[in-house]
Image 1 (cartoon, rainbow, N blue to C red):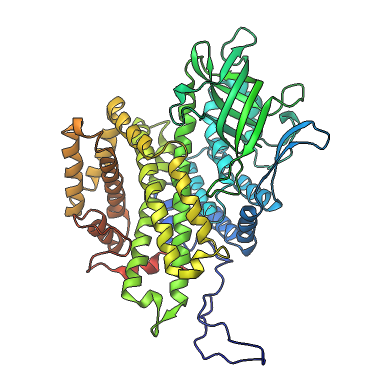
Image 2 (cartoon, rainbow, N blue to C red):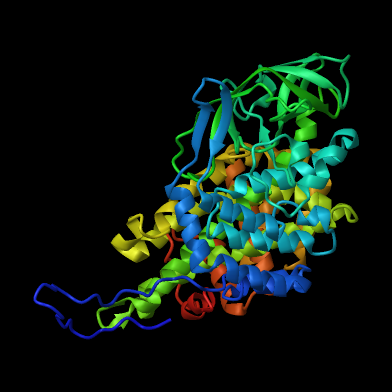
Length: 559
């Protein structure tokens, strides 16, 4: 990348007022994987070293000017609802710009929707998590149906008589956006519909009714009548939804088309006008005696679909990690090329501090999410890893998604006015951030899930404490944080009221332990000196003196 010139403007024509100088070159045609040292190291450390070549190729693809432009266009030209055709027949179809289909095809071809299930091997989940972090940096809205499809596979496998008909095309790496019955398509995607107007996260208050058509029971058909207040990606081929059956809340597979090829009675009322996530269609729908098939037992809908929700929560944290990563890349790139007061911004001590502090946040999030992916990889064979996943998933979602909007705003400030206009990506990143904290359970729900995991599955807490104690003795500040966690646990009556503070401490301490064990000394020292200190600053750019801030800032983007 070339340096911007610092010479005085030379007016080429009588009408020229100035020459453009001191602006960074376009940030495109970069390899998002090979330029991310922390991601590369984490992939190798957590068991996916075999995937480096594939991820390098994918990093070049998603960092290309062509893919960056597709991400921009997919958000500029938002989905359109076609409720009826010109004769008045119901269509209930959503149309997307070709750029949306371009990024979707790239993600599906990479296997982000299903590769750990179709090609299981040690490190498969880690490879996919890295791919999600990469693609999130370019276009994150389309990853909603990608993520829901990924999360649906374990649920459908539990109902083989249903899953057997759907899974082969769900696992396919083809992308088939055609609005057709499932048997006529090469590949399928699965969505999810849980929340209703009156309940939100409290899905047990759902009012949608399911009436058995053939006597009821797992795998049989029910008539579904009701609504969903938020149902994202309504062009998926089927949805896992919750409704009230005779025995209580139950889970159903609701396809867009019925076996005879006719449209199922899923009525799209409108598309939501969201703050961000504009490329992804989120809808309000009604079910007018639609047909769905029961997945699992009647009355066990929450426990059936909670597995899908758990994977979806992991996805929210991965998306926030990728978005933060791109925000930092944009900020570092700008600071390397922009000059002020006779020096590049990255050479100004205060700016170096800001960049290094943001880079620490991203490296810690990356380390935690790749470690969580390793737990998902190993959970079938290792009860401790399964236990660890139960508690780390909500803790990671809570903390990473909470930190992300603040970081995006700080990165925007690094670019100044250029960061606050829609020509660049930072405005879109900023608007994307809050939804990851809202979807699949807000902050309070995540904190309560951590506490519930501790109470119902004490082995989860023991697995996490064992992981923390493995890093004990290497840093006195980390040792102090572990001691504070143990003090909270000694007074369990106070934990719920202090749930956010406790989960924050848990997540940050786990990040610190990973960095102390695996990151360069400069990174681990600065993270512990800031995040685990009693006087931790409340804004990015408040790293204490004595930390190697320039080394951290340079490590952040190896371009």
